[in-house]
Amino acid sequence: MSNTLSQALVRNFLGNSPIWYKQAIFAFLVLNPIILYTLGPVITGWLLIFEFIFTLALALKCYPLQPGGLLAIEAILIGLASPESVYHEVEGNLQVILLLMFMVAGIYFMKDMLLWVFTKILLKVQSKTLLSLLFSFFAAFLSAFLDALTVTAVLISVGVGFYSVYHTVASGKTYHHPEHDHADDEAVHRDHRDDLEQFRQFL
Image 1 (cartoon, rainbow, N blue to C red):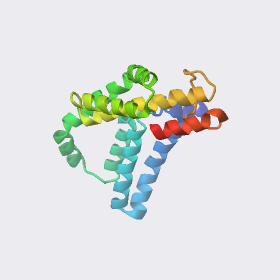
Image 2: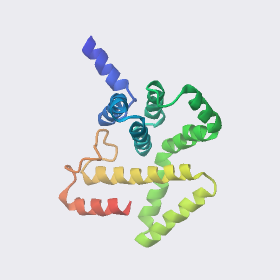
Image 3: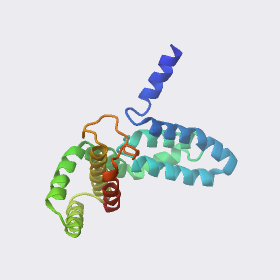
């Protein structure tokens, strides 16, 4: 019964995100109080900033509101911030918070459509220079209607989508392979490794 309960807790912690991601967030939550006690609040505060950046950079692995919220709650519990200061910051930045919750999250759900549009561009245009200019043009066009954070989320979503598709196919698997690890190059065919490295540099 205990094993089943522990497995259920691990499986439901942060939803369907990868095990290594869950382990990283859990390690952050465990290490932060220890680092605060040993190295002080300044080092811990900077470490928390990098942990938040980590959750944002891997937003496609797990929606950052969950791990970011856990880190924020822990920061209050260990005394790095007071509830009053958090309330003041929320009150002053409520628009940005709502933007993060809905606009950036909406980009995640439109990932397939964005990937389809930019894939058409990628397949039609053969020149790298022209392709770079087109991407810059679309970024500027989107910037006219969206804020910089949402445009960045669009470009990151498209870039990660391109890479995931290419890495999966280069590994000899179908596009919708459910358990493919895009961080592992062992399965990538030798003939495709140079192309994969050039594709990484391009992205």
